[in-house]
Image 1: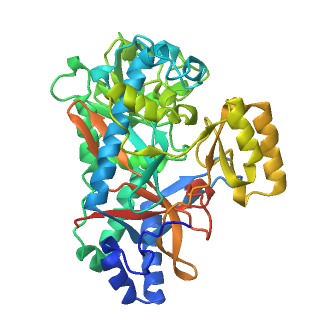
Image 2: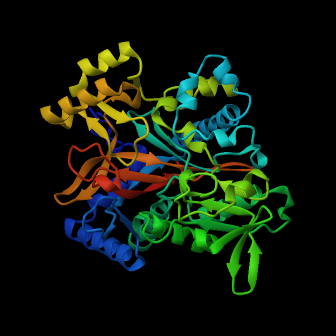
Length: 470
């Protein structure tokens, strides 16, 4: 049975939700619907949208927003924050090692083929010293909760994690249309995230950048599904939003074209995948990147955030080794647990997965966005048999996990207020001056009754996450 974050087993309201319970008792469905419509209008007017790849209509969509906030106590957040910081420190050390001395591979703790055959591993990065030794400047760690005390890491997003614009937009909505509820709580702020982000990026500028390094955000352009977020963040940070065609490289230095001539760029917050960054170094057919960018990077003249090759640390096969990675590099027990995971590349574990397919969630090692996965309890016999054939054909490309009873929170849906399953994506910033976690992060909610899929591309929505002083 799923853990209810609002109600204890005896039906009493858990302390963090006491204010929400009182507020819900004083509003009726018509008032809630009016506020939901206000939130939707805010999203439409602000152009807060996302696109779904493969959508035949190709239209931008408004992400569903649940107006009832998710509540975490400051005590709960303190533990979660410590675990997130530990996790990100370990990820950075792991990346430095696999592109450096490869001690963890030599120790036999992580199989070398999982690293070197990983399509996200970049052999071009071997021996390259990244600025300040930081690979993952912005991390989005997906968290699930199963009881009052335990948070589990579901996935590490170390490449170009998205969703922070929905976190900031959700907070602004709540502040505007839920002022009565918001004012009754002492909620930790998230609106300083853009300032923290730009400060983090400036802190990791190359040593020759001077006291006022220039930061820009590199976007693939308006047809990317997350373009709204790119433009939103650039505006909030007060930095230029650029495309590859706006930049050029000369003498291993990166410049942007301006009406006043060329201006040197010191840090690029890139929202472009490795493959498309530089047609001279990676995919020669890329029209999105900057010729010579990787050369400038390896020469130490520009910082790319996140670093090239970070994807080698966040696929679902490496995820299964994160407890060992934390212990190896930090000498500490992991604060946050991994979800039990079967590695289908292992014949014994594959046999178990095939035997229990209707009970398990099966995921592609390199999949994302809720695609390429099987949720056994909700799948048809035909879908299960199709996945059985896939597993037998390429077992090394899949992992499997139990069907977690994701925690639930009260949500305002078509039939009124009802529990819906949620996960959490906190954002962690790592710069030369240390690590910062944004208090709360983005809660994603499965809007359909009984659904465990929270991805917006699969019908999920979002809700504001409040860390309250308790």
